[in-house]
Image (cartoon, rainbow, N blue to C red; front, side):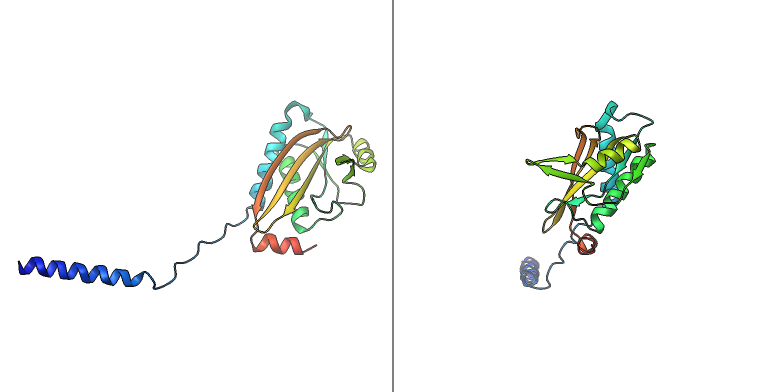
Length: 181
C-alpha cells in the first residue's frame, strides 16, 4: 500500500511540474517560407512551353519582355527583371531561341478598353526578328506574397497562347528586390 501511495504522490508531483511548464519558455515561431524564385520561374516557363503545344513552332524565336507591376505597367523592379530573365533562360534551355529585350517605353503592352495589347513597336520588333511570340508577365505585390502571371502571347495578333499563374512568398530577399528599382 505504501508503494502505491508513493507512486500516486510521485505521479501527482510530475503532473504538477509539467503543468508549470505551460507558461514557461515561449515556443519558437516557425520560419516564414522562403521564396524559390528560380524554381518558380523555371516551372512557369516549362508550363508555358507545354501549354502552348503546337502553337509554338520549332525554329522560330520568341522575345522576352520584362515583367511589370500590375498597378503601373510602365514600372518594374529587380524582381520583375530577374523573373523575366529566368523564364527566358529556361526557354533557351528547352531549345527555343529567345531574343532578349529590356523594357523600353511603350514596348511591353498598351491598355485599351480594359484589354492589354502588344504595342505596335513590339509587333515591329517581332516581325524584324521573325519572333512568333512574346513572353510577358505582370506581378502584384501583397503583404505576404507576390502574385505573378506569366504569358506567352502570339506577336501577330496578341492572342494568349499559354498562361501560368503562381505566387512567391514575400521573404526578405523578395522585399528587397521590390524596393530595388
